[in-house]
Amino acid sequence: MRLERSIPADALDAIRAPLLDAGAVLTDAPVLQPLGLLLDLAGEAMRSRLFVVSGEAGEEACLRPDFTVAVARQHFEGGGGAGRRRYEGKAFRVAPRGSDRAEEFLQLGVEAFEGPSSFEGRVAADAEMAALAWASATAGGREDLSLILGDVSLFAAFVDSLDLAPPLAARLKRSFAKPRQLKAELDGDVAAPTGEQSRIAALLAGLPEAEAASVLQELWSLAGIEPVGGRRPAEIARRLVEKADAAKAGRLDPEPAAKVRAFLAVADRPEAALSAIAALAGPKAGGLNAVLDGWRARLAGMAQRGVALERATLAAAFGRAFGYYDGYLFEIRSASLGDERPVAAGGRYDGLPAKLGVATDTGAVGFMIRPARAYAGGGE
Image 1 (cartoon, helix red, strand yellow):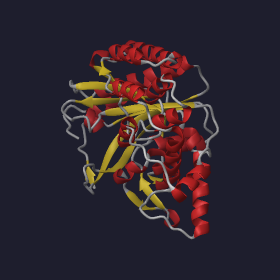
Image 2: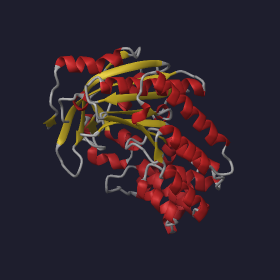
Image 3: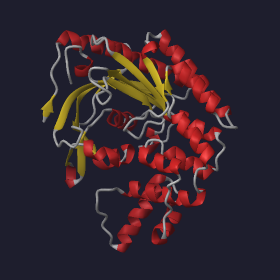
């Protein structure tokens, strides 16, 4: 297993210091995490990056690739509610670009589980997490840092402004984090299910995701079918339902497709990007305008907390590999390390508790930082 370089204790202390002001309780989470749960939450595309091992009773598990899900599980299993947790420990992933080499690296972070609050309150929490991450990253001494911003919910609000048929709008929103699927939507190259697939898809359509996966598993059991290829019931059910929606909703017309392409091409200084997106809005722009106002408030809060917005870019197409993020997103990058090795990253994931089976209106936002990347003398 490849270990990252260690950094001097005083440098680590400086990088850690902003996190100590977050009002968070230091916590830990099990190194072994359930593989199936992570794949259901993050998507099958993450499988190649996970370090898979045998868990208890022969069940597949993986070494924690990140702390967010592990800390959220621990938080809600312990009673949930409002609270903040800070962590510091090792995470594990398989190196990218087809390598089978595992990486072990130190990760620090904060996860903020906020109780019921106003939209303004959540925007303020977003700004605070980004500012803590920026302060921590800059404490490492790098002078080539930049900030990239995005928002899953901004894309959803933009699609809603176009006044599309509801099934088509829902399908388009789901494709945001899947570049190939999104391209197919914009190109009008969407296939519908046929034969048995169509009947099964119709059966699953309309069911909650967990229930659809359970029904599919039961069908397999009754038919004596053992799935192959590593895909889980939730992933297969999701794909079948998406294809059923394709059959019902039809294809995206050229005019809204052109607007979506123009939206995805927006990448500029944050205020300029927001203005460009507003200019592209469709006939029902009320919800989008509210989201844009929230972004302006978020940016103001970040600036007040010391984030150098002159180094920030708001990229409408920006997303993250972990599929549980459902709101604003950010990464702090170093020019010398490149876009594929962010120094820090975070975002909002209000929907994660429900996916963990927790009934709560607690919101969630957080970030992580890799000290070895933040440190100016490091090269990880």
